[in-house]
Amino acid sequence: MLFENTIVTVISLSTPLIIAVIGETISEKSGVINLSAEGTIMISALSGFAFGYITDFAIIGFLAGMLTGSIIAAFISYCDIKLRMDQIAVGFVLTILCIDLSNYLGQDYVRINGPMVTKFAIPFISKIPILGNVFFNHSLITYFSILLIPISWFFLNKTNLGLSIRASGENPLAASSRGINVKKMRMFGTIIGGALLGLAGASFSLYTKYGWSESHTANYGWIILAIVIFGGWNPFRAAAGAYGFGLLQVLAIKAQTVTLALSQILPLLPFPIMIFILIFIQYINRSERNKFPKFLISILGGNQPEALGRKLPEDVK
Image: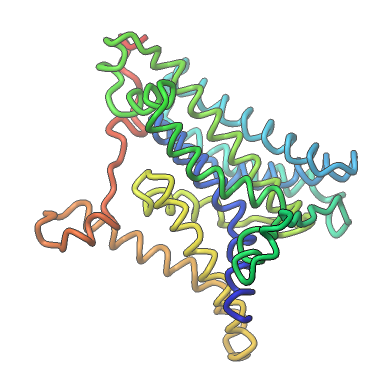
């Protein structure tokens, strides 16, 4: 029973992480690093909760979060493509702006109740012993996050649009020479990613960390950027990293009841653990791969898009 409850908690707690990681993966596959992930999630959490509270409909809150994330991503894409500004600098400035803005605008929404996102047990199959409760007794947003994993992989690897987005992030000149509108693909991939980051933000305040408070989703944006690298820009591996981080969080919370003396430290442990894992992965990717077993390379090795974070050549259409 303890194991079953732990898995259920991990799946629910990881819902916004999964959505955000998939969104950032799609954005980076197009060649754009959305470094504003931290700020985007924070202000989307506020807009999602605020509109959900005003209308008393959680779905409106989720749509508001997606719109917020899309607008921020569109601005980053405009600065990258039209103004030829540095993606990292723009994203970092937007992060600071969005965090401060969300803390200022969110003062009226602290410690108030908004619309609840309830669980929806899938008829019949939710009654299956153990598996039914673990996988088929969640909220609709959690089901969406699970389905998003294979859907995003299929989109990026098996559809013409997804392959065009990937080509634009790998080799913009070659993609342009083959008739792909690289600028359009970059903007499209970035906006899709931004919309998912916004949805993740709304999922925090309307579901996993119900309510709004100052710095409500602090540090999750940076962890999401790390998990994308951990996942080697592959939706399945990135999702595994998100669930792994969620498991570390749950274990740290449960350990608090056993070790009261470390109650303030244990919830922070998942963050440095993820950083050390990321350093190890980068070491593997930058070293000669014949030093490591093939199974380790297949699990931890990654393929960063070649044009990630780079300005588009001026002759690219």
